[in-house]
Amino acid sequence: MRGFKSALLGSVMALAAAIGTVPKDAQAQGQTLRVGMAAQDVGRLDPHFAVSTIDRVVVAWMFNGLVRFKPGSIDPSEIEPDLAERWESSADGKTWTFHLRRGVQFHGGFGELTAEDVVFSLGKSGTAATSAFAADFRAFEKVEAVDPYTVRITLRENVPSLLGILTNYSGGYIVSRRAVQERGDAFARNPIGTGPFALDRVTPNQSAELVAHQQYFRGAPQLARISYRFIPSDASRDLAYQNRELDVNYGRADQTWLNRTRQIPNTVVDVFEPGELAILNLNTRQPPFNDIRVRRALAHAVNRAELVRFRGQDVTREGQSLVPRGYLGFSNATPLLPFDSNRARALLAEAGHPNGLTIRVIHTQLPEMLTMMQVVQQQLRRSGITLDLQVVEHATWHQQIRQDLSPLVYYSAARFPVADIYLTQFYHGRSRVQTPTAVTNFSHCDQADSQIDAARVSTNLEEQRRLWAEAQKILLENVCGVPLLETLLVFARRDNVDYGYELKGSMSLGPLITEATRIR
Image (cartoon, rainbow, N blue to C red; front, side, top):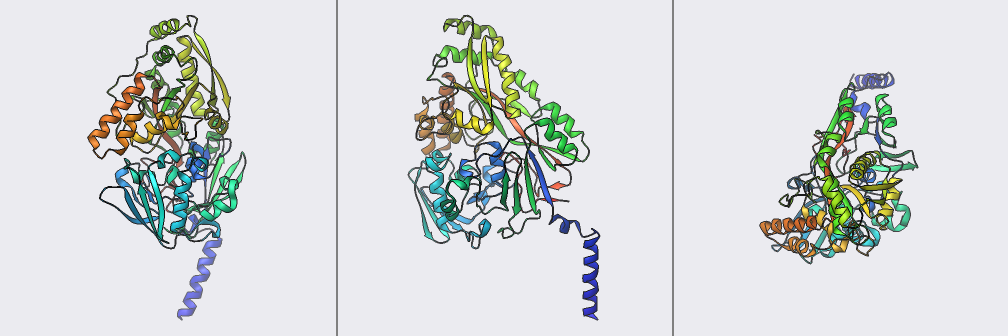
C-alpha cells in the first residue's frame, strides 16, 4: 500500500510539473534573473582589474573574498566570514592567520580552493602589472600557506583596516591560480571564481550570461541563470523594463527618473549607499591647471547646490571634502571655495586669460556621468571656462585618463569607507597615473603624502583622524580636486524579486545576487 501511495504521489507531482503548478520555490530553480545595465559591453572580468561600475557589479556575483560585507551592508563593523571561516591576529596587529573553509569548489571543475590559491591571488592583487589595486597591498610583507587550509599574512606596518582590504571587493577577491595561469590574458573574459554564479559566456555588446554554481559552499543558488544585458541607452533600458523584458534595471540617480519609475506597477526602487563622490580632478603639473589661480577659478565656477537640484534631493547631496561623507576620517573642517562667478572671471584674468579659456577634456559616454558633466560644462561656461568634451566609450575613457590624456578628469567613485584608501588612491604621490605604482591620482598632487602615510601606520584613532583632516585641508588648499556631489546608487526591480536581504548598501555598486536571491 505504501508503494502504491508513493507511486501515486510521484504521478501527481509529475502532472503538477507538466501543468505548471509546482511550488514557487521549485519554479524558481529554473528561472533567469534579467538585469539591465547602462553599458555598451563589459570591460575586464578579472576582478583585480574591475574598476568600472559595469564590471564591479557582475564580478561580485562570481567571486568571494576571505571575508565579506554582510549582504546589503557597507558597515565595516559587520564584516563576516566568507572563504575564511575564522581568523586571529598577533598582539601588534602585524601577523594575521586565516583558516579556510574546506571543500570550497571553483567554477568549471577547477577543483577545491586551497591556501595556495589565496597566496597566489593576494600576490596578484599586490602587483601593479596584474592588478589595478596593487597600492592597497603596499604594507604586505609576505603571504604564505601554512598548510592547505591556513594562510598567514605578515605586514611591514599596520594598516587602518586589514579586513577591509580582504573583503569581497576590489583586490580582495580570490581567483583560481590554475585558471589564471592556464588562461593568461583570456582570463579577463573567462574568469574562474568560487561565487554563487559562474560565467557561461559573453556576447559582445549584448550580454554576459551566468549560470548557477551548483557546488557553491553556501548551497546551490535558487536562481538558475542571470542574464546581464548591456543597454547603454537609458530610454531603451527603461522601455525594456516597462515591457517586462527586465527584472532589475540600473537606474538614473535623477529625481525625475526616480519619481516616474516609482509609479510603474509592481516596482520597487532601491536607493542605497555608498554615495559615489564625484570630483573634478585637475592635473596640477600641466597647463592650464599648473597655475593655482586657474584651479581656484574653476572651483569658484562650480555651483554644487544647483547640481543637487538638478539631480534631486532623494539621490544626491553636496560634496564637502575630497573624502566622502560617512567615511572614517572624513572632515569638512576646511571650507570649500564658494560659488562666485565674478571671482572666477577675475582669477582667470589675473592668470592671463581675460577672455576665458578652452580646455579639451576626455569624458565617458556613460549616460549618467555624461549628463552631469554637461551640466558642469554649462556652469563653467558662465564663468569663462569652456570644456571641449571628447566623448568616448566607457572602457576607452578609463584607459585614456590613465594615460594622462585629459587635464581634467571627472571621476565618480566609492571605496572602502576609510579615508586612507580614498586619499591614497586619488591623492598620494605613489598613485600618480603614468607611474609604475599608478592608481587614480589624476591631479599628480603629493603635498599630503607625509600625513597620509603617518595616519596609515598610526595605532591611535584620534591621531589618525587628525592626520586625515590635515591631509584633506592641504589638498583642498592646493585645489587638487573640486568636490561636486555625492550620488547614491539607484536600481529598480520587480516586487517579486527578492534579493534575500534588505539592500541598504553595496560596495560592488549594484545589488549583490546571492544563493538566496529568488523570483517569487
